[in-house]
Image (cartoon, rainbow, N blue to C red; front, side, top):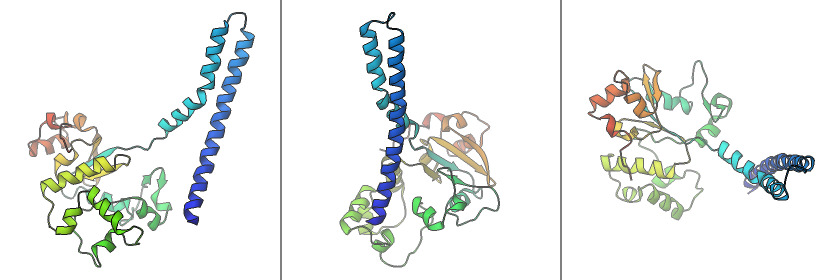
Length: 256
């Protein structure tokens, strides 16, 4: 409770700090409008002055909306592809600092991940790995290791991500239908998050915002899927050709 309230207090103080300054800016603009109307009273009609003051008084709302739009979290879906050994898995491991970089820096939300603790870093990002892991303990413990949620809440989340029946039946292997459901869930439930998808099926990333192609651990291509695929000499275009996927298929994949 104390931790929750301390976070809430910090949020309230920050919002009040921003709100106060936006209101000061709006009030200054309103004052400037009023002074302008006084000095130009011989050239302005009463109706024009009224409109000027009315629009000036609405500037506070407009400034709030401007800040809200300008500070929206980037919610791109980035498809990461490359042939075996290109560095896709190493990139993911580096994000979690399982592999520590020997040089260079990785920034998440403009924060150098080397400067924060491992617990804080790994608690803020999520990974769905390609390799199956045999874990110890119950399934419930591995879903909620800190017992923060009730059984009903866990079952509700499992139903939202289309895993309720799978957990009950404990089937194995991810078939094409399950993969489609996973991608559908990511796009519907994580639409406010930035998603990095390491593709083993190219159809998985055809509707991504951008494509990142790795080769020998280095960035080779990075742009919108159609723009990269339009270059017949690009590595992405060659991968599409090998998979018998045409340019017209990009963006037309329906995961709903």
